Amino acid sequence: MSLHSLPSLVIACLIAVVVAIVVTAIVGLALRVAGRHRAWPGLLVRRARVPFRLLLGVVVLWIAVALTLPPEVTRDWVEVVNHTFLILTIAAGTWFCAALLVFVEDLGLVRYRVDVPDNRYARRVRTQVLVLRRLTVVAAVVIGLAAILLTFPVLQAAGASLLASAGIIGVIAGVAAQSSLANLFAGIQLAFSDAIRIDDVVVVEQQWGTIEEITLSYVVVHIWDDRRLVLPSTAFTTKPFENWTRQHSELLGAVEFDLDWRVSPSGMRAELNRILAATDLWDGRTGVLQVTDATQGWVRVRVLVTGRDAPTLFDLRCHVRERLIDWLQRYSDASLPRQRVEVVDPPDQQVPSARARSAADGEGRLFGGSPENDQRASQFTDAIPTVDHP
Image (cartoon, rainbow, N blue to C red; front, side, top):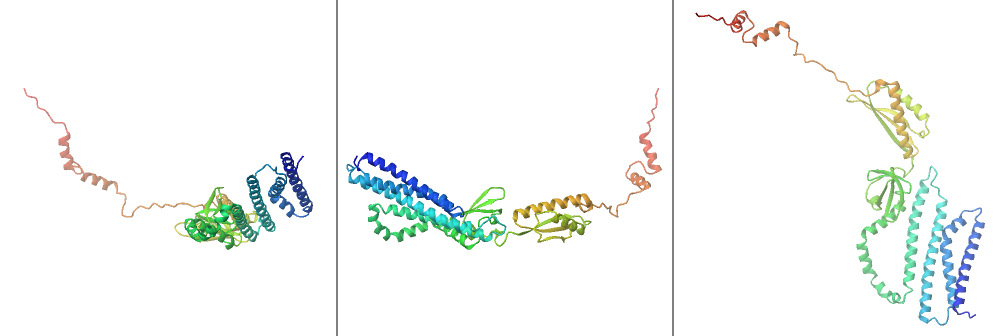
């Protein structure tokens, strides 16, 4: 059987596929054996196994086809086949290079854990590495596409004219994509200015949440009720926002009560100390009860407590509020807020006597109040006599 024949081509392709699978398996096994006491070989296998297998398969198939291609295939078809394998090799190589770069970035992330209490620096590094990863992938894709396009002779001939008009095209593209470029540079600025990091607690657009994702064009905020607020990167570079965990995660919170004047601040303070001592939500830094105002019939009592992070502080404030309300209802009922109303009669309005009422009634009647008036009234009320005539 001739080497340059169709059966030889099929057999060579099958052998190439088997060789690619065997070589990939051997390399993966060697990395796993070497990584028994280290984590990076397993990470490399997970990241680069598929692109490496694809790249190796394309290369060995290209070699097999080039060695066993039948002679009856025309030169034009040979060029098409070689060009196709070249494009596939560039694409697979780009994917493999991007996977290697992502693997190197993952090695940097492994050293910084974010599941520890003091993780501000780790979150900063993680944010920067994630943004660099996206830039790396984008750059690899752009370079790969450029390399593929340059394999076409028509584009190679037009390269000089494209470079000559690059300035005009760049100006037009910059004007057309002004907002996109602004978000792109804002995303890079956020990654390296340390204004926000992954898992930072922020208040933006009157919403409280944590930074879930930072991309080159937008930022995703995980709101406390499991909604996602997607904001452009420029929203964090042009508008003010609150970052509760930029320096540290510990926070100070307040609980306020409007109570009656008969409240006992010392009794409430003693109960607050007992509540804080019995809960794990309090970090032990600050636990203060103060009377901050006493006007308009109310006494305002403010409690200041601290927690290790924002969710814990919120739970602590609710716990302190609930326990103090329960204590006020059980042991200090007089302290509960009340509305007082005092009814007072005006001094110039007195109740008249019976004789005065009679005199007033008599003055108001036409036939009453005196003997003469009573006699006159009888003339109208008595029966009228009648005279009988014969």
